[in-house]
Image 1 (cartoon, rainbow, N blue to C red):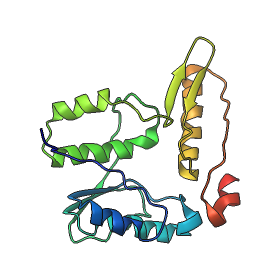
Image 2 (tube, rainbow, N blue to C red):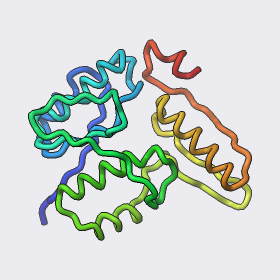
Image 3 (spheres, one colour):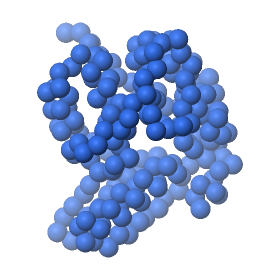
Length: 192
């Protein structure tokens, strides 16, 4: 047996981290899903976050980016492909905000030569990660668990998803909000 594809998430909190990650694991295809107020305790602002995330493409042959995110910048000698979100695809997970990530995953699979059938099967049979728009239901209540490391952008998307879900299913929305960490100078304004 051998590894044909290795998919790594390279989340960053500090300046220089992406350079280290790309040194440890050379990248053929890089993906930048979004740039938002996360880890600003150490990365300070959107411009610094965009620069640091953009370093993932430094040595990549191809960099795929979310076409709808104006904050994304890329440092690469490879090809940059802007990917638009897919529409009307069925996945076992809530949230229209995830359609851009789905489009990036589909484009990556196409570049790797996977068939449309394999891609469709993967989209409908994947297991959502814990605490990421996870739907829990019983006869008394419905809970949408989106408690993994929240940030302002993800929180807004979760609230919108909650409201849409409750409207469709004629339920009363109740939002329980936890603290968003590592926001530095944006801590108060982001929570407001």
